[in-house]
Length: 92
Image (cartoon, rainbow, N blue to C red):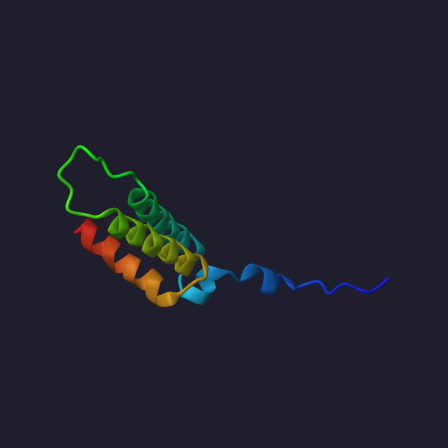
């Protein structure tokens, strides 16, 4: 039977928050922001409203929001920093 390699506690403790350079709680907050943006972008367009956005624009926005969530989940430091800046501006 082949021996399995067990990761050390240090390797298991690291996560996307480490790659992003923030603590775990901050990363979870940023991830929730990204998911909220994605969920908002996925809301259906009301066909009765005079909407200037085309369905293709709406679809593109949804794809962008999916990439935003993926970047946060991958621990992309630039994306996390951008969302943190946006959060601090909204709070002021």
